[in-house]
Image 1: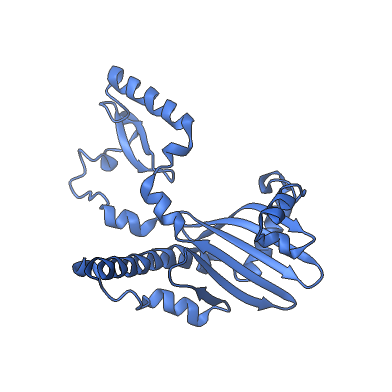
Image 2: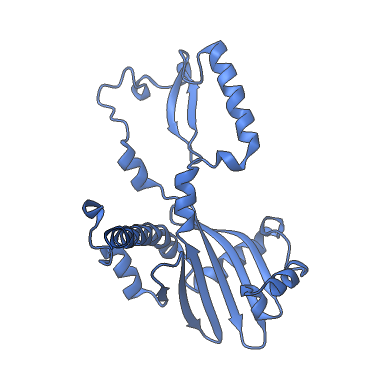
Length: 252
């Protein structure tokens, strides 16, 4: 276990640079999964929360298959087709790289220019796993809560990935305490509230306005790039601390 120990408290330069140039203040309690960023914006108090649990969940189920039974059916169908025709990359098709969802894009062999075919292009170098990791990041859930004194709270559920903030839901709570429930009674009361329609059901112009609303408050590309990196850093730090605690317990 000693070999796995390092200096878990040294912030990488990119993480440090963001904190030094960002209006947000970091709140990170050792031993806790959740991380907070807070700031004041006029008469608004903005709180951003995310968790290292997303990284651990991704490690357990990198493709999310366990959460979507439909994908199991697709896998079964794919296996059946491969047994009959040799699979998606059999003769007559060619690999055109990975799509954003991680699937392999293929095209008929005849429709691909000779220079693009791997069997004819001598100077073609496929991407390594490390290069692929540098180009994409794992999805991290980021909750944004904006409160105004006496005006309630607006809570926005988003996902940060590949430098983008994607809004999932926007909720409004007349009572700001409902945005961050701390008891079972409050949670039950929250479930009975009408908090707004699904974000995707909103008018396109309204969706754009809400995206700009968040961007003006610092929920932007810089944050979307920083959050997954900080989650990775914090998870490693917590792991090293866990190793130290286990070692101390075993040696006691």
